[in-house]
Length: 249
Length: 258
Picture 1: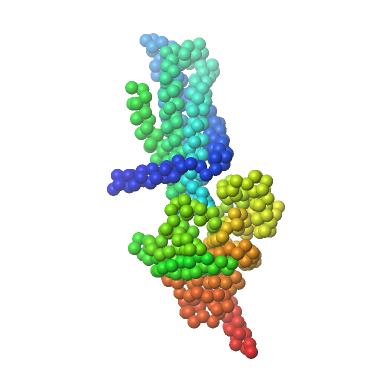
Picture 2 (picture 1 turned 180 degrees about the vertical axis):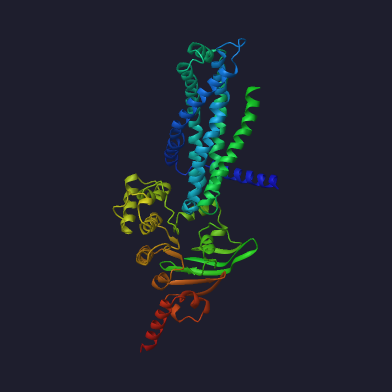
């Protein structure tokens, strides 16, 4: 039963994506809307990303220091471990799980409200491909801007760890900075960026799908928003495992 | 002219429209009336292509909507304007942005020309001066008028209105009715209005189609409705004491005429 309904939902999602990835009716309007979405979904998320990243970076550094304090482990390991945790998992997977809540619910509720207030019907009656007009700029805008958010997250997380070294006496600044540079693998950055692009697509498309097919009223928009966030979070975790296996092995 | 021939529609085995046939004339205000749940909204949604009937024909000046491919439907929709029950204005756009939207999507005119046309439409619905406001900043009646301006921006051949007076006070309802009637005659549009507002029925109903339990029960105009023998229609239209008194007065007045 669950399998059948999941397959049916996946089928509807594929058909929806086929409508979304059509050629836009008006190129200029599409570009304008994409820039608006970059601003709304991407640039508006920067403050949240910075705040979360600084605190999580600081916490990772403190926990590393407290848990790996041993005469057998070099002191710079704190910086090294903090860097690798941030680059490999926090700046992409965990960040995207957080953004699935913020951006995903924003997208699902916006499109869902347009559905229940007949704005999507109005677009259809005019002869506009509403899925393409509303959703494609969101997907393209968010996918394009996500790498920037990831880079900001990486930088501010490491700054968070640095601040711990500066403010407290848990770690020495020079050891922390040395650890950040030690045994650096550039591929980890690319790995994080590649994952984040896939996750951005999942967040924007799944949330749009749930919003687009809302039936009912305000209560149903809320439900669709929650379902969109839950579904995209699960898919992010699933693809995290798949991409890690594919890209790091 | 729009002709509906033998349209049937069912949901989960329950038939909502039973072979409905009707004609909607050009240059006239055509009203679909009926109780809630009678099937008039399904008929309206079938007419504009938001629902696919199980069988029948919907002919827009001889072109059958149900035989058209996606491209043909898209082309036809450029000839259609629609006014939704809740106005369905785009929240993120200003009043001017809403009216300019169809022009930007479907014409290749310079911006100034599109703006001029949008301002003309806004003037036509007496909304000059409100162009920079957002839908949330204007009243329900004004939102309806913006929706009318948007619907006529592309000079549609067909105008569909789903309960245009829903949620409006009687005075504003009359303004909207008169506006729709004037626009219909001025631009020679085939206007189809889905309503259960009796003021509209008796005020602008030039061609009235009464739907009852999914069947087309009665067709006529606003003058014929006072003397109809159709029981269901009488119960529906003259449900309130006020309208019963109006009918008595009109009928006795007609009889006393030489």
